Image 1 (cartoon, each protein chain N blue to C red):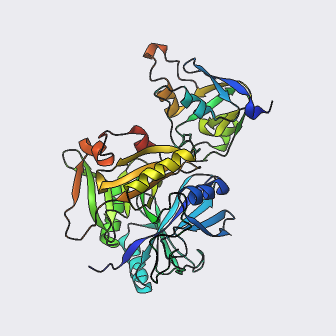
Image 2: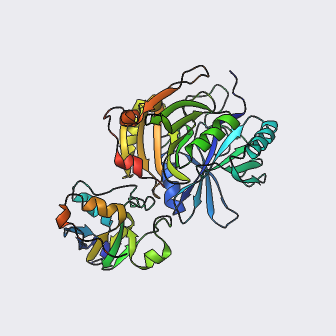
Image 3: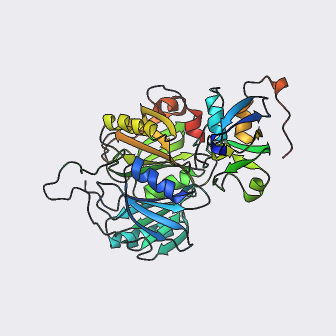
Length: 118
Length: 314
Ligand code: FES
């Protein structure tokens, strides 16, 4: 099967949530489809940076992302804009900055994972 | 009153991450027409576009770049003499930096442009001349709209809303040096500090607006004019039909009273199409909005501040 037609599992490490994401669907669109409040959907075009995340594990394809949001060094370290990334395998993802505050907003403070070292 | 000095917004140069999807968006969705392409001095691809009801050669420039956002906004002034005077005034004001003359022809079919950076970090230009191939319906016994109107059928590039940190400085430059008028102000706190300024150079409710934010040189949105509320609703249909990234609307603004829908281009730059709003004359009192009612000022129907609208920009 062409990767675009496959479905992969995305694991949001911050909340423990898992969702299925199609190979032609962006990670952010897959999250949006969860229908939960708090997903910081911004421009959906790789320009505003609100969906900034880090891919901890997995293969993916990232379309061009605004350098104002993700530096070349960050990109090399797996930092992405979730609205510009489609999965090529199962993915483990961790939210950064705004995205992190938003996805963990519904958790009680004790259940929130510690801030990862950056 | 005759419109003198700075007449109107003439162009906006938008940075896009990939040129082809951007052209498709501005042409097929918003309804602009591609006029020509060239390569900027730094080697980046540029595409020049115009709306069907605009006479000038172009009004929107898309430039392929690594970052989204706005390169600069250009203002057409009434004559070369005004261009000389205003450029000298800007220089003498001490309020602008990075002043430079762009040579004639750097924008196609366009005369020399005076470029400068305002205190909020935005790059502005003044120019007096651009060739006028004319609008799509001509000027002799014209029809009200052309047969090949497509997408949203935007009439013209209308204004930008910009975010920056030194609103007071930019406000001073636009009003005291360039002759703009304040139509509406958003104020906060007991001493009513201005945190938002809607500025007009002619008779529109605004030609540019600035919002105080702790950032430099940020674009909130680029706006295009439609005819009426029905067209705004149809624009929202087109947004859904084409799977364009919707932001907010259709709804109405309290500020400027415009009817509006917001969406994003493929690089994440926010666009607006709108209709309505009032005519401004020099004797119209300034409208004031307090920070507590800002939600109503921005979106009149639901009267609430929308975090995404405020905090997403390029
Ligand atoms: S939503 Fe704007 S960069 Fe992803």
